[in-house]
Length: 337
Image (cartoon, rainbow, N blue to C red; front, side):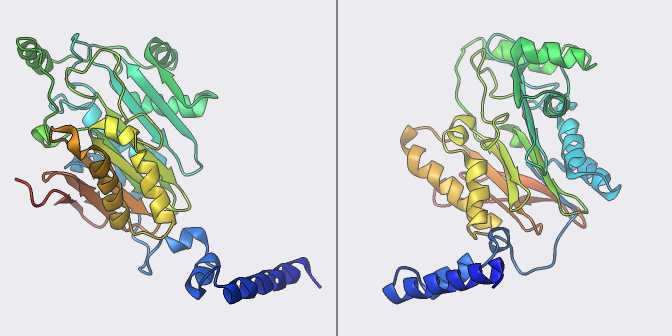
């Protein structure tokens, strides 16, 4: 008798015994015989190449899709996409043009992850326009996942990145106005953009993700949010799918929202159901803080089905499959004005 046949017979005997004792149901046994990755997928045809980004970042999804259609990796796509808002001086929450901390310093965080589970991140990086590209270099050129502060800057310069001033005239003006009262209150959907998280599935069906931000406006010097944290701001698993977050990072970090969404998809939830569950867990834990706050999630499973959900109204996202479009996400607090 072959080893495989012996394993099959043993498994069948044990399953029958468990069924007779009522330990597992027929439905449970059927689920156990299904590949874990397949359990999270729908029966629809694959929808890739595809890319999705938090907020109406159609410039980012456009840049990402260009790479995907050229036959490049999803990793190349998400890096190219993330670089668009990083270089946009009008985007006050990402990269060049980002609002500074309360001491007037623009500090940047980013992470990137590929289909093989490799990841790189930088935190508290100053003076480099494209932290997402530095994060990729950390992933590819070092034995580490994360570099921070001066060490991250030294590494970036050694890798050939140019150091430059990141505080724009507009951001400096906003900071000086903030100094008049020095009050910090998170503003829900401020200017309809925030951290950019971007996911992509390439023509081979492989998935990668990226996340980049300048963090909270006028934050404490040294503060790092969820964006560069693998599993919080962004997470991908090539067997299942990926997720990315935006909004108040402290609550995303303490719930590991992106990792949670991927694991929920692994267990069989659709991307939409998983995003909704992740949001509900945050609301359940932190709704009594007294101040309104926003967290939004996007997700893709391996077939290219997507989901998006937020706590408050106003979160939108960009999706590029056959067309590059922006959509309003559904939200939790529908009964609140």
